[in-house]
Length: 158
Image (cartoon, rainbow, N blue to C red; front, side, top):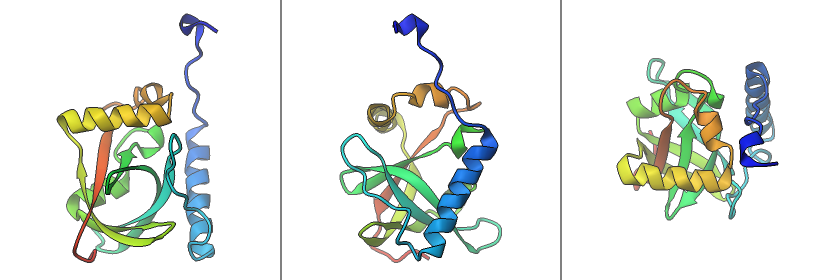
C-alpha cells in the first residue's frame, strides 16, 4: 500500500483502553508483581510499575507504564491512553518528583522530570523507532505529550 493510501492508526475505544490497563494493574497487584512487568529490549518497550504520591491525597498511587532505557534513565510518555487531559500519575509526579519504579529486576528510587528541547526531540524520535504510529496517536491529543525522564535517585522515594 502506498504512503498516500495508508490507513490512519486505529486505537481501541477509550473504555477498552481503560479496562485493559486497569486489568493489567489488577493482575500485577494480585500476583504480587510476578505478572505484568517486562524489560525493554531493542525495538520493544518494557513495562514498569510507577508509584507516585497523590498530589491532593498524599497517598501512594500505582500505575503500569511503558518505557525504554536511555542510559541509566527510564523514559515514558504522559499520554493518558492517547485521550484528552494529563494522566493523574504525571500530575502527581510534577507535584512530588521523587518516586519509585518496580522493574523486573527490582525496585528503584527515581526523580521524574519532563524532557525539553533537543533531549525531548531525541527521545521522541527513539519512541518513533519503537512505535511507528506514535505521531498519529499523539495528534489525537489537544496538546503536546510530555516525554518523561525518570533519573536514578540516590535517595529513597518518599
